[in-house]
Structures are given as structure tokens and as C-alpha cells.
Length: 284
Image (cartoon, rainbow, N blue to C red; front, side):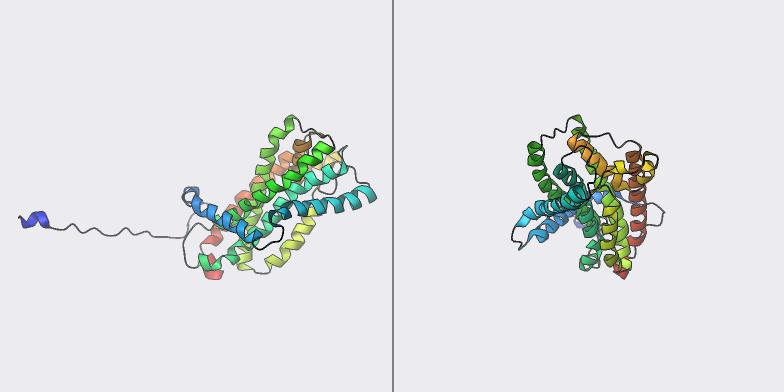
């Protein structure tokens, strides 16, 4: 046998070099898509941990907004006589609490996700964006379960949503994007400054009363309503109510301002998180 034909071909093993981004905007969405299965497992893990060893399980997703609805209806509706734009009191408050509960819980979970997963971050490489994104997406199950109570409420009070219901996915998407953008900011800051987690509950509480959950945005003078839309949750919550119930007027200029703020918060959150990502394993 010819010796030349038996010569083994030696190939070098592939080498993958992981380097921090150098540009001002290098968010690799293609890489994030390649790790979509990891995001799925993070989401599933968060859901299992949330309801592990709980007495009533997923019923908490209904119980929390239901109890808040009763409190708001009693104090703001019956005692303070806040206007409800012609909606039944329970429907008014529950339709506003649904997006708010999802947003506040997602924001809180996303803030601590980097610190809680520090053991994984320091040992294995994966897009760090997967962590806050999974924290935001996992809350969608609670939102869907919470919507189950709204259906009998609307049936009992004979509230028909109508064509505006078709825009509900748009307002839900805006809520997800806002929770993701703010969550990127706070999760990155919490990895560096651990006292951020103590600030978040106060921020969420202040944000609640700055948003039209316990009251209608109609109490704000019309000429200042666009300025009120600088709080992105104002336009989103009003849009939720309008699309779910079909009552009242569309948010109008307020939702336009809120959408612009959501996009700014999301883009700046991605930028800040990207800058922090290259050093998070060293400081977390």
C-alpha cells in the first residue's frame, strides 16, 4: 500500500473567541435567537420556582389583582368617588390592574435576575439579555390567568368590548417592551449597586399612583394630558381599558407620547445593558 495514501489528515479543533463589544451599539439579536431554547428553559424554570410548594398555585395570579380590585373599589370608588368613565367599578379597576400587575411583577423579577443567576454567569457564556427577557416573558402566564376573572365580570355587568379589542395585543406588546426596557436598566444597575433592589419597591409604589390605575386619566386637564403621557404606563393602561371594555375615547395624543417613551426606554436599556454586559461577570 502506498504510504502517501495512508497519511492521516490532522485538523485543528475550531476555536471560538468571545470578546466584549467595542462599538456603541452591538446588540446581537441573531445570537439571542440562537439561544431561544435557553430562554424557554429560563422561563419555564421561573414559572416552576414561582409556584413550587404553594398552597393554591396559579390561583395567586387571580387572587392578587382581585384583592387589589376590592380595596381600590372600596376606598377610591365608594369613599373617594373617583370617576370611572361610566364603567362598573369592579370592571374599571380590574381592567387597569391587569396590565399594572404584570408590569410591576415583571419589573421586580427582572431587576434581581442578574444577581440571582450569578453562579451561572461566572461559569458559562450565553447572551446575558436572556435573563431579563425570560423574567419578563414568564409573567405572561400570570397575566393570562388573571384575565380569566375579567370575563365573568364583563358578563355580569354586560360590558361588551367591541372592535377595540383587536388592539389589545398592541397594548400588551407595549407593556412587555416597557417592562423589558425598564428591567434592563434596573437589572444592570442592581448588578453594580446592590441597594437598587431596595429602591425598586418604592419606585413601583410611586409609579402605581402616578398611573391611571386607581383613577381615570380624564381627571387630568386635557391640555396637560400629553404631558401625563410621559409616564408610559399612563397611555398603556388607558389603552388597555379602552380596548377591553370598548368604553370611553381612545387614548389619543397620550398614547403617542407613551409609545415614544417606551421606545426610548427600550433602546437606552439595551445600550446600557450592553455596556454593562462585558464586565458583569467581574462585578456580580
